[in-house]
Image 1 (cartoon, one colour):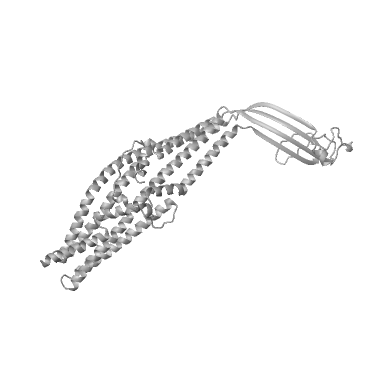
Image 2: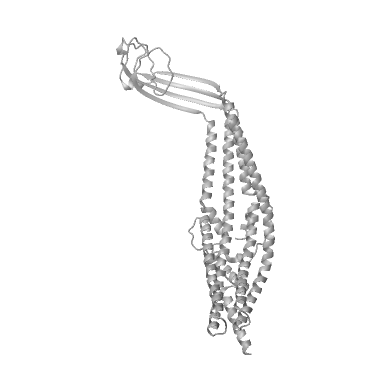
Length: 482
């Protein structure tokens, strides 16, 4: 009767310890239910909120948005090339007008003076002015300008596809890092619970060793187990800090401790099916758009050799301080007055049409077009590579979903058996019916079982996330965590 009473007391103490550390599956479920009921007002960072925050604040996504704005502005710039060139010029100068017969070519700094030819140099000078309006309009480019616009629009589509891809990839990374941080935090809790269990055993062993009921070596083994548990806690803490820092970077936030939604440890996804094909994946769409952009650019390069048909016109007004009949012999026929010199008195206009074509451009453009063609082929190869990888990942995701669901069914059985074994071994040890090695093995098995059940549930969500990432259907995942 006395032995039964001792066994009953030991059982009650052990169950109380397990309940305190949250080591049994039932205790975990109860804790999750309580946390879930107060999640709305407890400052918990939900996964869907983390994704939204990251998509709004992550610098890489903001950069992609600015790339779109930049390429959109270049489309408008390409369209504006249809507009004519209108150049207005106003020139006022003071100088001499000595003329001389002889050939010359325009270079920078050439003096342009019109006047009679003299037998000798003279230094009579006056003010003069030229008012000029030139218009040049390439109204027919034989598809060259249109292909340039199409190439610019293709760049906008590529940048937009890259933006959507960045959003998609960042969302997946945030979700994956969130789940990794969640399990890392659970590892810390399990390590803390393991320390408490090891300390509980240590206290019992030390007390029995001091009373001479067991060998002193058992206390050394118990001390080593406690030390190992503390080291495991340090490793779990370091891992949690690293993952937390990764999540903080994705959210563009300070790496302070996050309170996460622990309901993932108590439920599995309700739906694993998607109608999305791999071709709908934003990553695949980006690579497909790169091929289209390269093709559009190649077309523009080939059409850049086309000629241009231009309309042009000029209207000119001129003023001069020299009279029309000025000669060196009649020096009174010019004035040094500024206002008289810049006043326009002669006007000319010119209208015309012309076609221009660089006859050597086909030879210059040939290799550039050939290079762009090879680049298009390279983009197509990368598109095929990404598509094949995502198809393989989709198959792998289905396999992982199946395996993770089986693990969720098996893990509670393992935890219950490990809990019972630990309880039995501790009770038997206190009554001298087993050794410390058996208790140590039971402690290790229980700790592993606690870890396995947490990992099993998270793996179902990780597998679902992998399928969402491979198919491109991120809503399949995010709608089930809101």
